Length: 225
Image 1 (cartoon, one colour):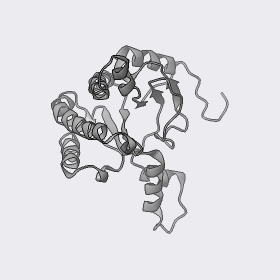
Image 2 (cartoon, one colour):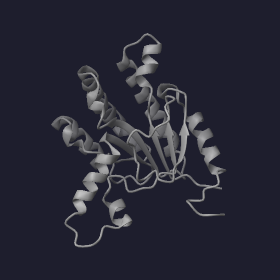
Image 3 (tube, helix red, strand yellow):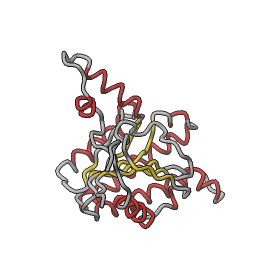
Image 4 (spheres, helix red, strand yellow):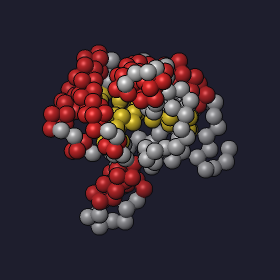
């Protein structure tokens, strides 16, 4: 029976969820943030799950309307400040991945503050992918290794990435069936689950069912059993 250590989620469908309900897209992002809390709490209460990585803002998301991007930045800042007590209470370590240098100084300060205040936590690692793109991550890793006199190995590259943990389960909500530049290296042998539900409708019960399916999958990693 497989054990799941690392779950990664592409949280898709916030805007569509709001539009279906006749609401502004930002209301979908607010609802999605509440689901992040619920899923993080579920994972923190499951001792087998070590890491939860959530695709929060991609390198391509800057192409969205300016007002929506500005709202997402404010929502992220508010979410992190509000969730800090919950992180500490549930022994959750916050660990961002991506190139956060593109964010405002104040948002960078908030990200760093929450990261530092939860650094001692040794339970679940909640990793938010912020201004993240897997191709960008790999390029930054390669450039950081260029000065090495050694031939770059798979292990060296893995250790130079923002996220150094292989993914067991990768979930995408919202009905699309693509990875959208998310954890391409780390998800090489992940089990993929594409869910029609929009992210604000995704529940801990849905995740529990996926984890249950995962435990019974025969994983061969390119070999034979």
